[in-house]
Image (cartoon, rainbow, N blue to C red; front, side, top):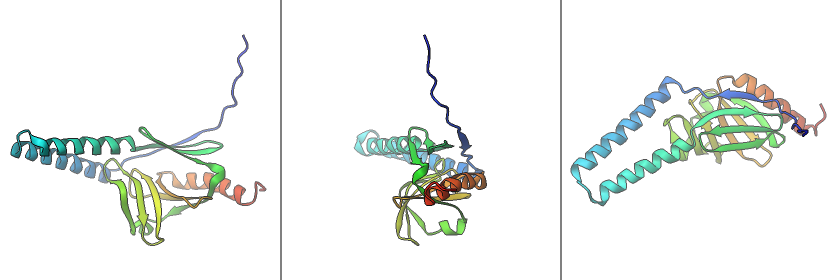
Length: 182
C-alpha cells in the first residue's frame, strides 16, 4: 500500500510568557472571588443569591479560561493565535500591515468584553483614540504588535520576540501590497 504524504508547511511558534505583574493580578482576582463567595455563603445559607453568584463566578472563570492565549503559530499561509479552546486564524495574504506598537499608544484602549489581568489581556476592546473596535491577545501589557487586515480588522498581540515576528509578517504584507512582486 502506497501512502501519499502531504506537503509540510514550515511553522514558527512564539510562546506567550506571563510576567510577574499578570500573575499578581490573576492571584488578586482569584482571592477576591473566593472571598466574595465565602462572604456570600456565610451571609446567605442556601438561597438563590449565593447560587447565582457561584454560577456567575464559574461561568466567568470558564469563559475567560477558554480564551487564554497560549502561543502564536506562523505558517506559510496563516497566522494562528492559539488559545486554550479557541483559535484565531488570520490568512497571511489578508494581512495589510504589521508594526510594533509602543506601550504609550495602548493607553486609550478600553475593555468592552475582555479579560484584564486574569492570565493575560484578551478579548474585545475599544480604541478611543482611533474610534474603532480591536481584538487583543496578550499575556502582558507590553511588547505589542498591531496587525491590520485588508478587511480593516485590527488585532494586537504581545510577543517577547516581536522584532522577529514583525519582520516575518511584514515580508508577507509587502508582497500582498505589491501583488506578489518582490
